[in-house]
Structure formats: structure tokens, C-alpha cells
Image (tube, rainbow, N blue to C red; front, side):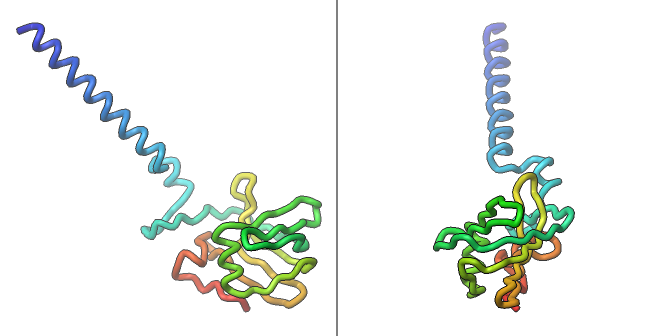
Length: 148
């Protein structure tokens, strides 16, 4: 009888440890921890928005474009790459860029990564909004991110 109680207790402890480990692993993989909720908000839509700090303005020149990315050489000499959904959105809006165009980029830093909120083409005077004031990408729905 004592063996059954000890064995049952060990089995229950082992199952509890497995369940706790599974919950911790799931939270780590999905980013569903209290830390990630303090850094991002999804407004219930599944599309996170960034925590916008200070808006900075950068200037640069279009140095390369292809279907996958836009490369801008900043006046500081650094390269800035715009790719993925932001670049697809710019192309979908027919913003009209050419190699050598001078751009002004408003945006914010998220860690070391610059996230543009708007781009203005000095050659054409057109401006495209990429993120709302709250940091939500305009392509995530509900935005008015048309070129002017």
C-alpha cells in the first residue's frame, strides 16, 4: 500500500512538472508573456503595434530597388533596408520611386532597428504614411495610408 501511495505521488508530480513545462514553453514560443504585452499591443486584431518613442527624421537617397527590398543610403553613410510588408505596401500604393531620388523618412527606433512611419519623396513631393500615430501599420487595416 505504501508503495502505491509513493508511486502515485511521484506520477502526479511528474505529470505536473510536464504540464508546467509545456505552459512555459508555449508562452515562450508565442511571446504571450507579461513582458511582451507591455512592449506591444495588438488591439485585438492580431497585428501588433510598436511602442513609439521619439520621432526622428532621416534623409537619404534611393540606392537600390527590386521586388524584395528598397535600399536607402542615408546621409550618414549607413544603409537602410525597407522590405517585407512595408515595401510591398509602398509598391501597392504606386508611390513612384527611382534610383537617386532623395527621401525624407520620419520614424522611430525600436532597439537598433529604424521603423519608418512616413516617407516623403523630394523629387515628386509625394508622401506615404506607413504607420499611424499609435504605431499601427496602415496595411494592417483601418488605416488611411494613401499617398498624397
